[in-house]
Image (cartoon, rainbow, N blue to C red; front, side, top):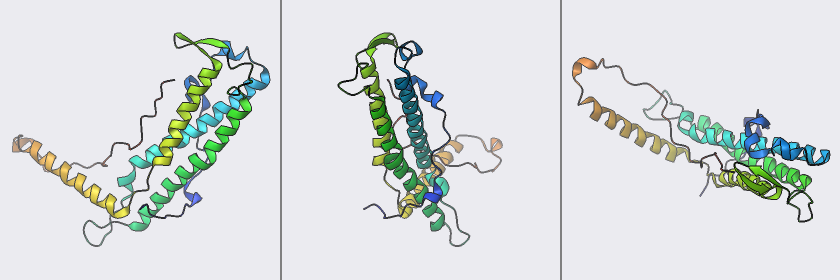
Length: 218
């Protein structure tokens, strides 16, 4: 059962710094197509691009937090292999707040912006306009459906994130530390002592991200 940690928004500063131009390859129509649309529709599409950028920035922050899980295990000065639970609780709050933000704030705003654009409406006069995209021809409506699928992927990934348990995280960290140590010892046994100065390797243990690849084919 998932721990019932209360979200504390002090650990989150939405919206994150973001640049809508960074996702223009996903969330912006080609200029040659855009100029064919009324100014009001162009403005609505720009607002949608900005909202998409906010969702994506939150998704990236969530992905980064998942990768930082072991870094939030702060060793205590007492018994060996003991860690600060309050420090990890701060991490849980940050992760929970980020997940809540993308699902309950950023995503609803994005849905509102896409309704304002009106492209997906069955009565939209622009949905069937064709244009060249990545060497092929698609309609504005098809492009919008692909954008919607990309945004849904980010939000669904966020919904699926489970808050890690403190004790389980410690166990996994120690297991990975032991495996890393054993692997290092095995490699060292094949090297002469002359090449080893006894200095331990120091670094931050990283874990592969739990979330899916953020690159979306449009």
